[in-house]
Length: 362
Ligand code: SAH
Ligand code: SF4
Image (cartoon, rainbow, N blue to C red; front, side, top):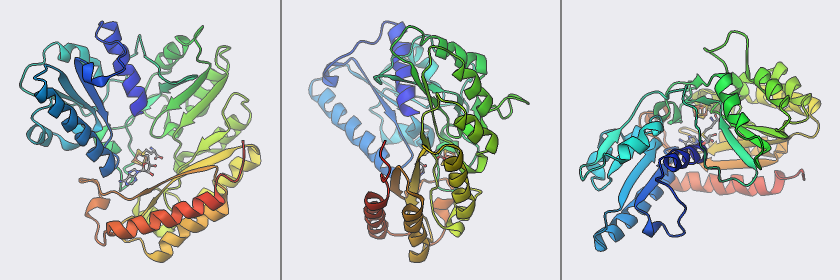
């Protein structure tokens, strides 16, 4: 989603004649850092880089403008102005369309622009796509799931689907370009259409996109297991344009941890869904995300995640150590696990992944 946002920002600035490609960011008049707040590491990295550039800017007494965009400002709110007064403009993930206008008003005082909700009616005229052959298309914004560890619902706001006409307008723009593959994006694509249509869901959207001659492959990120339906599985199975790697985040292999994470499924339900997908789509490559060291996770509960990796032959597993995000329910749970222990579990899990996942070859 961040990559897609960056392409949209670059497109908006191109329309205003404010963007051209440079090999060296030090030579840029405007530096935009599009930030991620999902884990503490991502946050530290962007601050280090910004400070590095600010230091160089001071040394050269240059007028370079530094912009911090994305989820970190929405997470930190007013604190960010106090912490990093050198940033010229700070803009959350829901207000990108105002960036060109705001850039023209930048002065020495830093300014903060946040919004709780994204304008779902915004359709980009120009998107500066960076991928070689796959076009990213957001189909919905925000998230309503409030997994107890996750900051996304607080930074990107409530879930809202884009109108199908707007999505089709953006896909139409890909005609006669090199993009015949698309990646549909949303925090939970399986609930596409909720609160917008009574009778049109993600499966219907896929069926309609599949009819377009200029689209050869349709992929999507991310589908939540609690909203995976038999209708969707059959739609995917019967649609030769749908890519066969399905990202299907499990997060933990233990039922108590899944409950504490507020994921709304058990390991057995998840496993049954994987089996159903594999039954109907024998060549499906199922990939997943796992978090280790969630508050209170015992050795035995952690071993259930290891067991899941051994049992389910994932194609790809993205593993991370739990990172407390202030304001989320999990951050104030008792029995937080210390960094060394989380790291030990992460290494053990990654060892298992390298032995048991990637077992299937494309
Ligand atoms: N909407 C997607 C996930 C978006 S976040 C979904 O539900 O699958 C991408 C991944 O980051 C998550 O799947 C999760 O594994 C990880 N993640 C999110 N918050 C985290 C945290 N606080 N600590 C560690 N990993 C986290
Ligand atoms: Fe975060 Fe859960 Fe929403 Fe994914 S579904 S973005 S993990 S709250």
